[in-house]
Image 1 (spheres, rainbow, N blue to C red):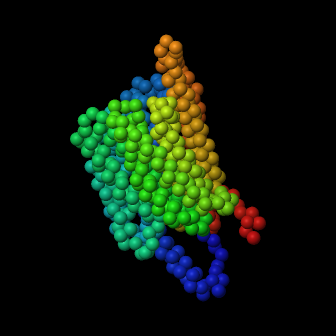
Image 2: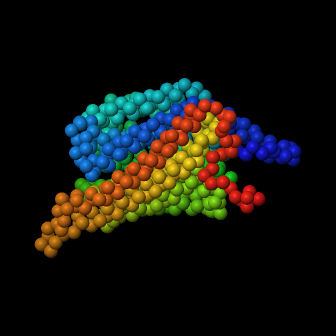
Image 3: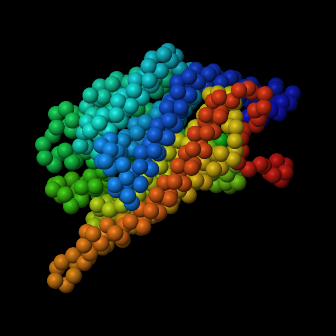
Length: 499
């Protein structure tokens, strides 16, 4: 976004002419996405703040269970479910809509037409989530994890997603390019996979409930795949687009990307079954899930190599960019959390991690340290191009990054260390065959760890408020007169770097 004028030779170059035409085309695409893209971002940020509030209430109740305990809507079960659903279907899904549709439109070089239909889908989706959260707080929730929103909002959510998701398909169908990019594979697949997951789970768990253990299998098939086949492809597609885009370097290996995509599609579908190790589930199903979880090492390592080799040698330049700083952090944590997930599927490891805070920490690691941080990076790149203005405060961006990065790392480590120790305590028995630690002793052991978890949550909350203030400031800045003409960077280039 440099303001430097091209030289005469540059102006006469066919390459420069093509680049100018491409910039004009992308500007047209950005203008067509301005209203729906901004709406999705604003909705996502508002849901992020709502989810943060519910998260704080949940964290307080871990150390002070009686807090607001006499108020029915603020009991632990309702608040925790409201937190989960507002984050998954409010923040994460709206962020995925915003960034995913924008990237798809850009890569297809196709402006978004008939935005009123897309906006109708966006409004009704968020109304459906609002109705679902209110239903949870009223006590109407479904007793299925990740599907707690009452069944009466399901038709609205399904229709809304159809109105939104069809635009990814339309953009791809009318693309102006012959080449299909890696990011398009992931994003288009995600928009196909979610309706398949959601409708199947709703039929088998809510409207025509399956019998017996099939309910548990369906529940964890759905819950695990919402992260793995909906949010993960959106996160990886965003990283595959923005890392090369910001650094000005092509992705390291197109062919590795092919392996990474298809192995993710092949193996992740089975992986959620490892959450039922030890349950009344056929042994072959557990074994298949364990094998699939271990085989997930293949796409994870492929993505890690592709991202690392694309960034290598450009770390200093990348560190100045808010987009790269958040996305590289998320990409690194994708590798770590996925390898930990493969290890958790092993029976010997699962023996100590199951039914403990280790699993909770693992969920936060994937949803926040990987996906959410990449979505933050995507928004830091996308919003200035939609609004044609730069971020007003580098200080708020730095505060956002350090508070959320350090906060989530503290939270994950606290939960997983505590969870592992608790798992070992629960497995210990005395020589006469009785448990070595009573349930009361284990609960008391966890209390100081949850105080640390509350501290980490407070740090993340500070980061969220910094992001919220920056977004509001950017949206309602009164004039363009005092806005910077250059991108908002976190550190300024040195003279040596500019030479």
